[in-house]
Length: 112
Image (tube, rainbow, N blue to C red):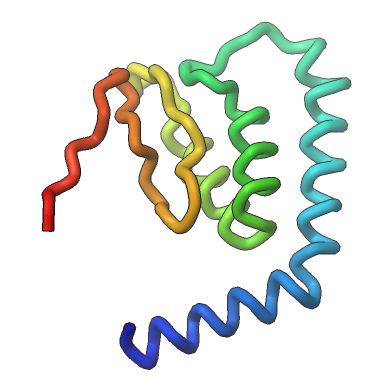
C-alpha cells in the first residue's frame, strides 16, 4: 500500500468513527422516509434490481455514509432510459464494483 492509500484509509476510518455515523443514520432515515412516502406515490420505474432506493439503503448500511453515498450517486447516474438495467447488487466489502454484472453474468477476475 502506498502512502496515499494509507492516508486515505486513515481519513475514511476517522470519518466513519467521528462524523460518519451521524450522517449514516441521517441518510438511512431520509431513504426510508422516501421509500415510505414518495416511492408509494410514484409508479415503479427503476430499471435495476434492487431498486435504486433499496440499493442506496444497502450501500449506506454496508459501506458507511461516504462510500455509500458515492455508490448511490453512481447508481442513480446509471438509472436512465439509455441503460438496459438488470441485476446490480451492492458490492461487498472493500470492492467498488459488484461481483455480478448488470446482465446477470459473474464478473471474471484474473487469477494472480
